[in-house]
Image (cartoon, rainbow, N blue to C red; front, side):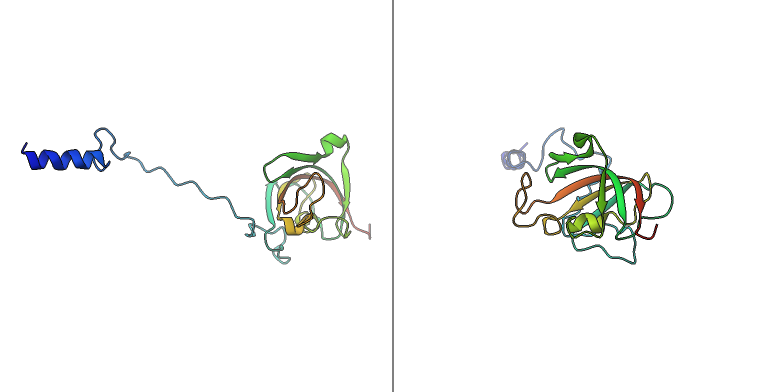
Length: 162
């Protein structure tokens, strides 16, 4: 090789444009799918009732029977986690199922809106932005501005008319 060509090849190798044995793989590897951001609505249990901005609902298992309506009294098993998946409450810790009144203003908005549409035996993950949970103030052990994750299994539901 001539000296200028050798110098050019050495330069290309040194800046990483030509690396022996590091050819591009023959098959394309699909890019990872980004997780939804907290301000995206992923799905709705009832398309006629849009979910509030940022509430993410994912049915893991659909369940059977009629869908639970808004305002129902529900019996659930759940695991409640912080956004880093640290468990802060669960029915397993309490050693009993829980009843939630979906019409009660004492229940966080994210649960009042994230449970309707579930069916008996259904399992659902609900990711609740802080604005629909405990907001700027938090509530120990939940820090301020914390998004929450609930994994919920619906055991039964009733309405006031039953």
